[in-house]
Amino acid sequence: MRKIVFSCVLLLTLAACSSDSGKENDPKTAKTEPIHTLIFLDKSVSVNANKAFVAQKYQGAVNEIIEQNIRNKGDKLDVYFIHENTSKARALSVTTRSEMDDISSANATDREAAQTSFDLSLGREKTAIRQRVLQQLAAPNPSSSGKETDIWASLPVIAKANETGATVKVYYLSDMVESVYRAGRRDFHKTPPKDNAQAEEWAKADAGQLKQYTIGSPDISMILPFAPNASVKENNPAVTQYWQTLFQELGAGNVEEQ
Image 1 (cartoon, rainbow, N blue to C red):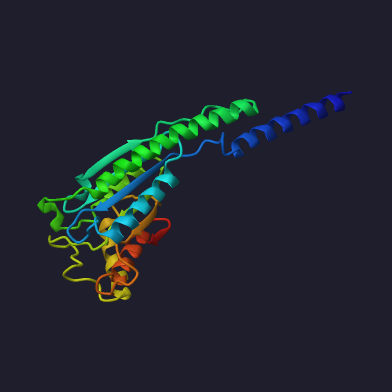
Image 2 (cartoon, rainbow, N blue to C red):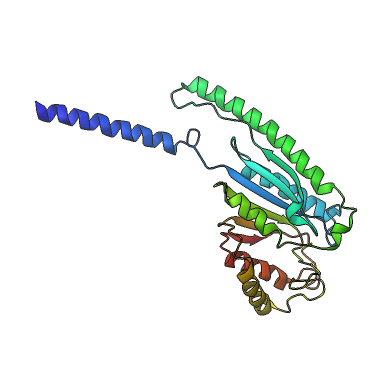
């Protein structure tokens, strides 16, 4: 008799564990880390986001970024301008408010109603966020800050986002041509890396003085404003190689060029 009772208890315990595990694996009930999205928009004179090709590419990129990363309550998106004062150039900050009701014990009808309500609320938020980001994309920069391109200054911004514990995703809508006139800085307009080997050498040397910024392991996308038929002089592959190497040296996860 004791063996029978023990067996029943054991079966009930296993069933409960299996049920809890199923809830964790259910994409509609599972809790996920919030995503902190950082978009760096190049507002230096070397990038014209109002040119037809650039505008189309960047508008499509913004749509995709929002669709992928705005999913749940607490997801955050910040937009910074890249220019002479990048780290102090936050132009937009929004956090998602839409929240999915707890449907773990709901019936099928209530589940569907809750999902529909959440999808509608989240869709409205995505539309509003998309409009605000596109407004910043089209905004001109008439000030003198557009004369320089300080991409290094984005690193402390990434490091601060990393401190929150969120999943950080970083997007540069930029030509990635670092151009700072101060001593000890790179000016790729004046002196770009001559080839990939030099780009990697420079990036590894620069990483030594930039390791103070703990950026974590974010995925980084460099979305360049160049047409497919752009010349090497315009779209220098060694410049991209510099950034791929630098970000990887600092611990970034996936680094891609688009």
